[in-house]
Length: 376
Image (cartoon, rainbow, N blue to C red; front, side, top):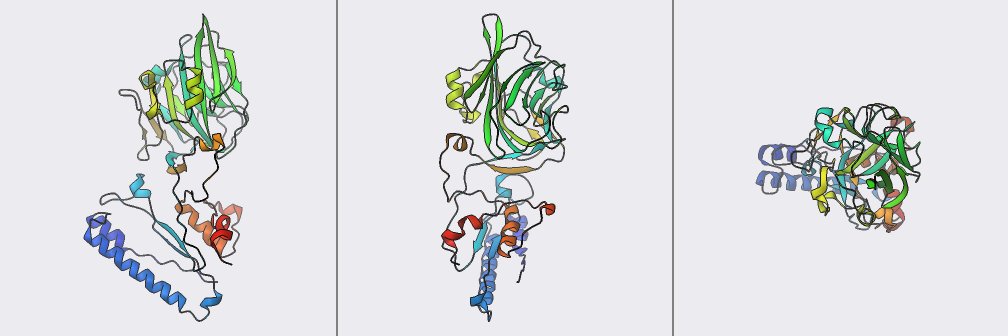
């Protein structure tokens, strides 16, 4: 069993000096030189005495991309890298990058916050119509009833304000103070869901309808429950009843000062807010995928931004908001690869089973395609 790592630094040096672009002649020259080095390495491997009885996996990648003359940020250009796997028995196959989205994993101590002084426009009061909608991906379920988004000091039943909270791992609740309506549709980890609360006036009675992926699950009266509080607006985590082990990502948070038509909610739950025909009625719109810095910008001019708290990091997630909900078949050539997937492939190839205590990130994908493009 053999293993080697070879690091070429020249390309990074030329990128910092003159730009990470083929328009930089020194960058192109360095890339051509490294390509020749790789060719020499492959030739040396193939000339090994026992090569025909060996099973080599060659991986070519980079630890970062580049933007102009810099790297290390969270922009797509700085994070996009090649990932090439080679074995002489492989059939040529190019994976298609699926639609993806940028985001962070919220958890205990890592969330987005709008301070109360700026968040008053998102108070719901005791009357009036609103629609609140967001997309949710649970990575790991927590205990109790973790918050998804909350404008309450405490997500229990005593504090004024409103929240979307989990319902013990089975669906979710919309609540104003202690009044709540629950949609008990089981969530699965690793799948995106769109959650919508439609608050409307039925004569003099204020009611709410809750939806998951455009399907209305429950309806109830809010009475005169107080939806105004002096608390911050938090997304991804809230201090009380948040569930210490919860890890989730939230995207496309939209708040409207209008009860959107039911048929619109049903037919458009997976769209981007950018395409929303009711954008004029939005009082808040955050895609939560800025990818750089700690500010999550509000798409409504003059409206407040979320600030990210804690030791957050930006990640790419597959953007299959609708695909999983509609049951469309997955394209076998569509795969979102990440740098953290390299180590699992190496251990798989060396027939080493990582211990769970290692906490190794990434996934093994070569095994899924082995019968199709590995001749063994």
